[in-house]
Amino acid sequence: MKDRVSEAGGNQGTLAKTLSILTFCINGQVFGLPVTAVNQLIEMVAITPIPEAPLAIRGVINVHGEIVPVMDLRLRLGLSFKPYQLRTPIILLQANGRTLALVVDEMQSVVDVNPVDTQTGESVFDFVTAENSHQPRFFSSIARVNKQIITILDADHLASSHLETQLTPMFAPQTTEHPTHFASEKQWTGV
Image 1 (cartoon, rainbow, N blue to C red):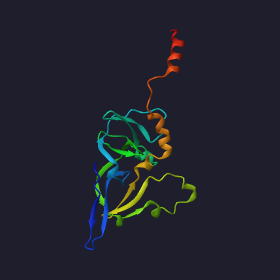
Image 2 (spheres, one colour):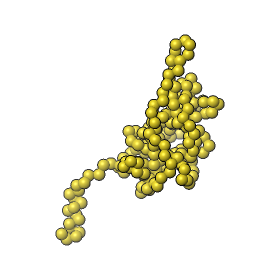
Image 3 (cartoon, rainbow, N blue to C red):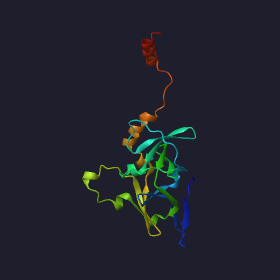
């Protein structure tokens, strides 16, 4: 998906950039991602589970030869698991420099958000107390579009440093030479 940032100006000559947001639902609530972070939308495909993966990571899928981790956004947000259907949508996006597949309940549309209709997460949630300030924030802002409230997610924060640390060893490039592995194999086989 290409960047759909456009300029809209008034008669006074001032320019305001609108941000295009891909909207979708999770548990009846509307969320959005900037279209600049979105690569592609697909429907459910076979997911291969990964042993010892974090709870929100349901496994991996093959996308044009690339192994891509699949995150269930419901689980990442602390909601209960909802069984997948054939048409359950998956958003392929860029998060922390890697492709991530994000499972959502239902796709909506792309909307243009005017900056005057948004508030950053900090200004909306500055009442967060010290005891839960360690919780990761997955949103960048809250937008109001046609009387609808949209929580705009931050793709990089979805794959936070903690989750990234857990995923990196699973997707580290494998070397083809393992001299110690071959030596121990010879010992066991008697060759």
